[in-house]
Amino acid sequence: MNHEFLKKLPKTDLHMHLDGSVRLSTLIELAKESGVELPSYTEQGLRETVFKDHYKDLNEYLTGFAYTNSVMKTREQLERISYEVAVDNQQEGVRYVEVRFAPQLHASKEMDIVGCIRAVNDGLLRAKIEFNSRSEVKDGLEPPFHYGIIACAMRFFTPAFSDWYRRFFEMHHYTHREKVFALASLELEEAVARARWEEDIPAVGIDLAGSEAGWPALNHLEAFSRAQRHFLRKTVHAGEAYGPESIYQAITDLYAERIGHGLTLLDPAAVQSRDIRDPEKYVDELAGYIADRRITIEVCLTSNQQTNPAFRDLSNHPFKKMMDKKLSVTICTDNRTVSNTTVTKELHKAVNTFNLTRNNLRNILVYGFKRSFFPGRYDEKRQYVRKCMEYFEKIEKEYFQEKSLQ
Image 1: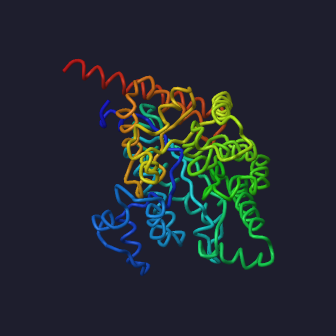
Image 2: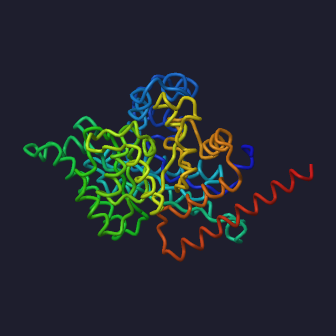
Image 3: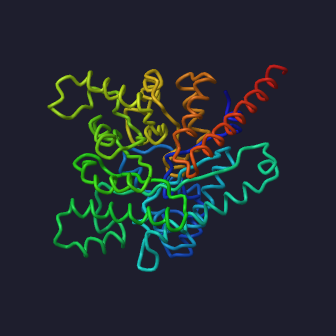
């Protein structure tokens, strides 16, 4: 299966950070307009100094976010970047995308959290309307483009993270910092619920991001309980840089329906708790629990390679073991710009590294559509998934028939 075929297929991206997916040309232009200093003002220069193909560690990987977030401060900037992200996805066959971001990093006295969500939606909606106005979509020959917005709560933060976080700390000067983290997540959840139910924005769910070690998911229980009551969907970064216990916390304490990364899920050696006497049995039971409930793992191959030396050789990645365990997995980009990748590139890596069959590929793609937090009714989602997979079968038939005739 080559790149051309994979690009044509209808795809999803359920784990993509907006601030990690800014076009370099846009970053340069907005930085010049805003007086933001960059290490280079050419795309090649930024690829050599900041947004590399390879990073020495996670800290170097995260350096680029300081630059992208510096040009995501106004409604116009957020709208433009969101529009371009949607267009970039459309151009490689992605028909459904969930854009996640932390509005708290962009909010200010001029634009609150709901205002940030509204600006991102304006950009995504404009791209959706343009794409779905194409004749082939209107005539039913191709599936339309849809999207959802996921807001990221942070396991921890400091006043230096953003102006909003600085003011939030100042307003809770006498409160224990872990309680402050919990209150910030609760404030975010209420804003997302308001955007969803009062403004009819497809703000479909919330996420929990940030360092896992020392910052347990349980601190954010109230926010995720409220999300449950507001019918918001839930995904959690877990098992990326901590043991499988972090994944267990995410699905039992926070009701996570999907797990971001989940790298340690099947690794007994990664178990941290001394109370777990049989790590191998623990991870086997945990994997069975997740498989039985179709909790989906959002796999991000390139970013895992770039942030974890153990996966420089991609064949060491647990993705194949996840497939063997019949887990629900979907391939995602994480950060299109920071990782210099696309969904098509990620699929190409997966197919060629792990010798996936076309049936494997079909399952991965259908899980992406089925396990999405689609903003419409369930019957609308079923119809949309069916249309996308019928289009998959059409492309597959055309491509491989053509190849067999050559």
